[in-house]
Amino acid sequence: MTTNEIVDAIIAKIEELDTDLLFGIRTLEDDENYKIGDTARNSYEWDVENDCSTYYTTGEECDGTCATGDWIDNWDEREDIEVKVNEWIKKNYYYSGAKQVLVFGKNEGSYITRDEGEVRIVDGEVLLYI
Image (cartoon, rainbow, N blue to C red; front, side, top):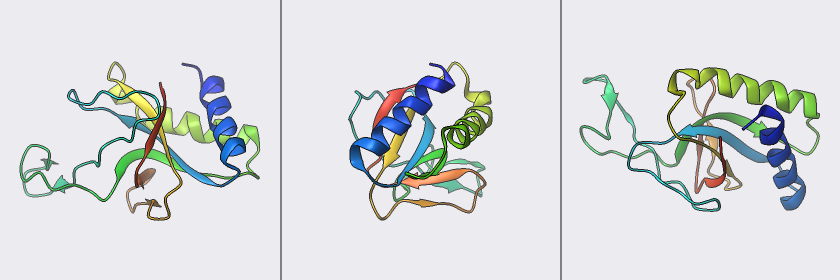
């Protein structure tokens, strides 16, 4: 999947829904497998004491799907979207080889977290595999 293909998919989805959307690249766990259009499950919180995901400890979930991303709106220029997508890909580089998807959300509960580049997308829909 090229950056241009990802940007094309983002622009098409914004035009289709005619609204600003939160997009992000999510690296999937081994037990996650989605079809295009599926809702990705909630992510897990970070267990600070054990320095690992709560997937392995308490099972505490986030209030959405975590991804590396940002808001994209109708007014963003293609070049600006390309820059954002390339940043997301770069931040997810250490997961290369793992399954990754582009998710988006239109739910008002979605937001950008305090962690640089991280978003939480409520009811994040799988748009494409990277």
